[in-house]
Image 1 (cartoon, one colour):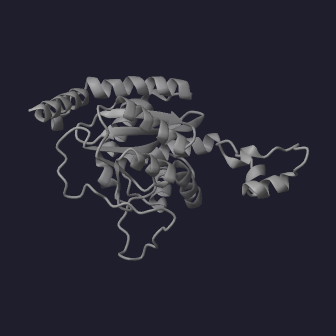
Image 2 (cartoon, rainbow, N blue to C red):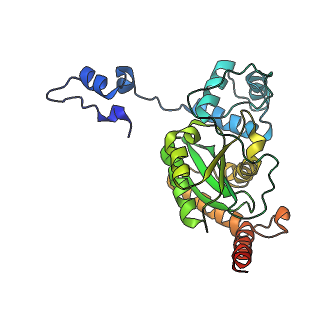
Image 3 (cartoon, rainbow, N blue to C red):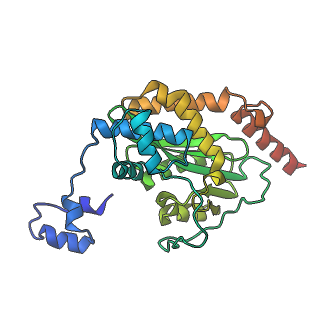
Length: 287
């Protein structure tokens, strides 16, 4: 729960100022009322999301040009930058060496998959969050995938991008998975660097691996999953509310796991590859 929600406006003994001071909450945060996203910004966010799936390397200047010409959405650079921040996406580009100031706000975990050959199910899991556009708002989707077999173990949707979203997806994956992974790979987003997330993984005996800054290729399989999901389902169906979205995503993920073969898996489905790999592991251990 947000600490500002604990403040009582008509408390018999404590003023709002005193309550905010005791809870460590700024009064501006308590009084702030979020504004609803306008229809213009919903169209802008949807267009930015589509462009990002095609070319994630376009900066705000080129995006403004593309929006004005190809999508006929009048916008300015500051608005594009703000909406992209709210969506949780950023341009992928190579920064000059040693010019980035390290972020000391969270513990840095190394990327453990470099040069590592991942050859079995449940050796490595990965996760990510993506923005889901809807006609009158947006949602966020978090999914947990087995790296070797591409099997989606768990997922969750929410209208907020917070720790509760990632925790729900993780809980589903832990329950559905045959065993816990040795390594769990994520990006360096705030949801995955929070003590709640990393502490949970470490309490389960799982090693934490994190992508390098601006290194979307370090988590490439789940990035490809987002592209397939959006072009094959989300952009076509335009879900109007979270209930319809959850139901539709459930059908798509079930079809992805159990019906569609993958050439990289020997034309097996992710579910078949996951179950067969786990069976082989058990037989090898028994022998």
